[in-house]
Image (cartoon, rainbow, N blue to C red):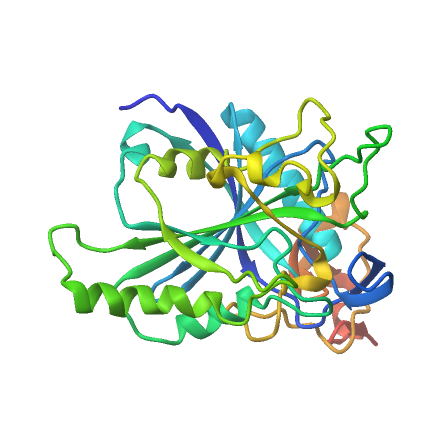
Length: 337
């Protein structure tokens, strides 16, 4: 068995909320406070973590957050902490944490891989980049290939020339997006088949243009970049606190092309759990009048009614009623009477 080179913590979303909370923050683009649906474009660990989202479009729609770590223990800790943060942010959400040992067999996989290259500031003021909605639409198109999309974000680490102070808005993030097509490598595509395949990826670039007229584009990347994707090593990081200007304005052209990020805020991207996502939705009972007190030592003299639902999520709390009260109580929809 191959030794892992590193580990991934993976948080698979199994249920999304029916109703979303909202969030308010100061928008750089609008220069005012804005209110949007709660976004998962956030930084709960506050330590320049690179967060990843893997979306797989096959017979089902798979939605998995992931992060790269050194050990299995850290993978479990990070994964469970991140899931708890999501559950707090999105009441009704449910997920499962797992770990993936990344070995040479995984790193040597070779499938056609592309990058969706976005302009540094990808949108005109007030515009929105609905990438998740586009992927949902792509999922509806039947295809024999398996499409995988990898979205990475990291807190903006731009600095100002004057005093090297941080200049990014409270909610500004670096963003990069990669795509992989898992197909049978024994089958060689002709030019028309390749064009048909890449047309689906080109669809993702439509409607993305910044104030300079720069548009998004698709670029096929070398197989060796797959290692960087698995390691979440996709961004240039301002570890020396260099004067970069807002959104790396003063150094952008000097950065390696493969390390240049786009910069977005939560109001500019649809990074939320919309009702269109083909995932199970939470069901919230009309009444939640549950007594959480434990039966304790009298449990053997009680009747179990099953796990309690809170905001549509099944908990580990088991609701019981004492057998001595059964003749006098009727349990209907979370109420006793």
